[in-house]
Amino acid sequence: MAFSEFRPLDESSLIEYIKTVPSLSDKLGNKFDDIQIKEIGDGNLNFVYIVSGSSGSFVIKQALPYIRCIGESWPMTKERAYFEAVALRKHGLLCPNHVPDVYHFDRTMSLIGMRYLEPPHIILRKGLIAGIEYPLLADHVTEYMAKTLFGTSILYNSTTVHKESVAEFCGNVELCRLTEQVVFSDPYKVSEYNRWTSPYLDHDAEAVRNDNDLKVEIAELKAKFIERTQALVHGDLHTGSIMVTQESTQVIDPEFAFYGPMGFDIGAFLGNLILAFFSQDGHAVEGNDRNAYKEWILRTIEETWNLFRKKFVGLWELHKDGPGEAYLPAIYDNPELQQLVQNKYLTDLFHDSLGFGAAKMIRRIVGVAHVEDLESISEPSKRAACERRALELAKLLLKQRRNFTSISQVISAIRELH
Picture 1 (tube, rainbow, N blue to C red):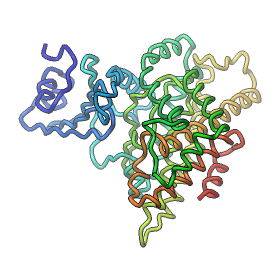
Picture 2 (cartoon, one colour):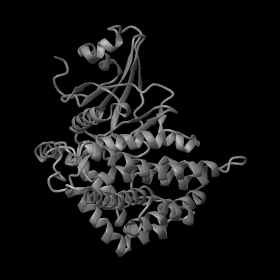
Picture 3 (cartoon, rainbow, N blue to C red):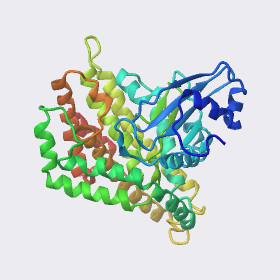
């Protein structure tokens, strides 16, 4: 067998590989003369190929044993492909409408074959930069988050099932450590990897590194990220991990998946929407001030939390007599008490989401990896002005998150800073 040990595939060896895998070659109708292969990996970690023929198409994603955008000087386990495939399958069972099908997984080759999300699907981040409204976005993303987070928690599963899954995903420690470094550590100290819009934000970056209150809060969130196995989170649920059309929303790339705090996923999505909001002034042009679009983003942020809460509580109600062991019916045996514990759970989750969202925003402004929403603003002073407002809001949210009782208060805070 030619593929019994790992090797990076190129376009010609990929065709040879596909011929050995029935689940993939069948998708092409076993016709190989008209195949087109296009490498599209714009991410930091993998090779991604679109394979298409007259009879069908799919995507091949192969993990490399190092960070692609940096090279072999920063090694990175290729085992992450295993966790991505398992997460896609688990999340796909819970929410088939918003997770692409996995056709094939090869652990030796660190390779996943999955559904090709054909045009007009684009990365959500690109759509937000272009000022495109997605009327179903909040509805779809909250369906994904509610179903995947509830369905992998002890609200739904027995503790035996939960611990088995937690044990399995503890193996994805290397990607968790990468997050620990770039989200919870680097922005708060001098690091060779940090960068920001200099000289405009020099003082702001230094202020983050010297903010005692901020460091107290980030330590608490870091501990939660490491210690709390609340649900199988996507682990990287930003607007670059979601593909959209006007009708369809698909969540991709869960290679950072692990059992962690639910708020890390909810916060990642909300935080990236807030970054998109603050970037809009940098994309305004004569005749389109982007004000109407900014209002749509704010509505989407508000809807995201409110719809998530409603759907999550709905799943809780539906399954309250199921195998979940968090709140045993024999103990939580009256509606008042059920209401009390639900409210406490969702209040805590709201505060977690604000904290993690803020942490993700901060690292995108003064840490290693930035977001195209802001990076694509070519005039540095204009970009820095947008970034400073986002950074101020993030610091406020991180420090004061427990004082917010509703998402509408968060929207008001965004408006005030704007």
